[in-house]
Length: 64
Image (cartoon, rainbow, N blue to C red; front, side):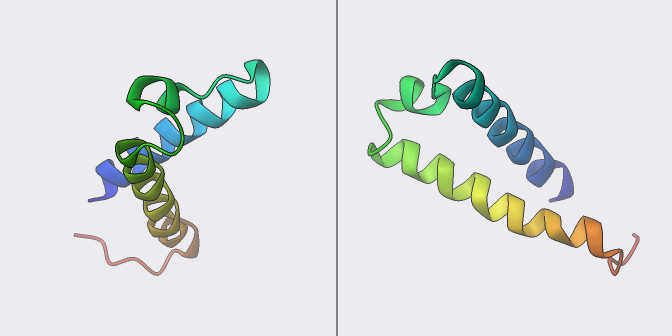
């Protein structure tokens, strides 16, 4: 789960970097616009991964 969350956070960070630097939304361009269902799903997953990744900062995670 940690690796999947990290991958989604990286995708989100790269997408935001492209938006900030070049005004280009890669996710929207691949999946049919910002309001397209699949784009919204990707945005939602990236957001959920960001929230999950907050636990990395807290240090209260159980090591397996």
